[in-house]
Image (cartoon, rainbow, N blue to C red; front, side, top):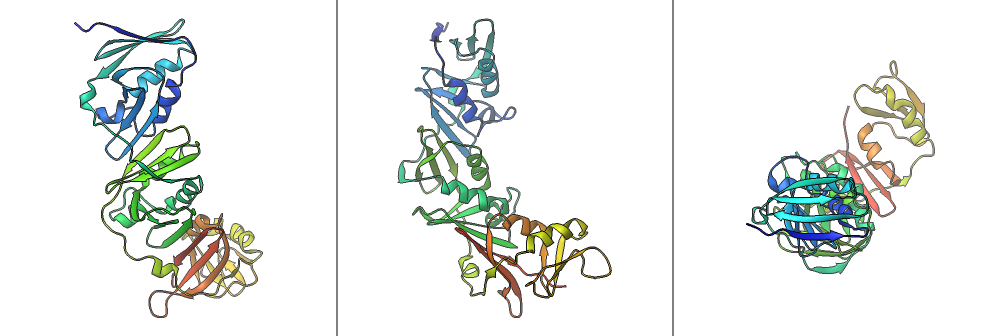
Length: 334
């Protein structure tokens, strides 16, 4: 028979906040590695095979409880509570008026996870860059290029094969690492300042200022050369003064999801006889642009070339530039 081990807290504890952090990785339902958290050596660690995270805790525990249930129990206790480790399968949590028995599983059923050693200082512009380019990626993509964000030294690059965006965060980091979108989604949820960066042949880790960390597996398949697209010569000009006013005026009338450019006018349809149009001085005749793509670059674009030379003969594309960002949108033909 396992002798009960009592762990008590008579003051405010960070345990609930720590478990909320590990929800970056855990789910309310699923396999044991999806739902349970390791509480061991004053650390809470969760790992689902792709993402892992860890954070220090005050409590000296040695168990693997259901993360959703233990967090729910602690949220009902208030600041003062006690924890009694009844056995490998049960954890007792008591507040002043509340009590719950939380189920646990054997620690050996969960894969251990440890962060990569830090090798560089990291700051919040990295997260800003990741947030800017991540919307181009899709976890359901059949290609690594479509499902990941490419680390390119001091910048990050993403593409959906129609739009490519590069955003500079300014930190000298490794080149050629393909980050899964799940990592970008998880990191965007953490508001704590970034502090350090580490990596290995199969993973990357970001540390926060409280020494908590988020780790991700990476893709091994290399990216193609997309820099050659971004480095193409073009002739950008400041975005026309009335461009976004004109865009807002006509985009709701579009039935195709595109807007059409005439000489100094933007239209919702290819024909002037239907839909809506709005004058916009400086717009060239010809481009057809996806509304979704324009909405994506809207917060960043300062200069733009609507008819830059395309990759293929006689083709064109849109190239744009902003603060710490540049990108290209593949041209459409009528």
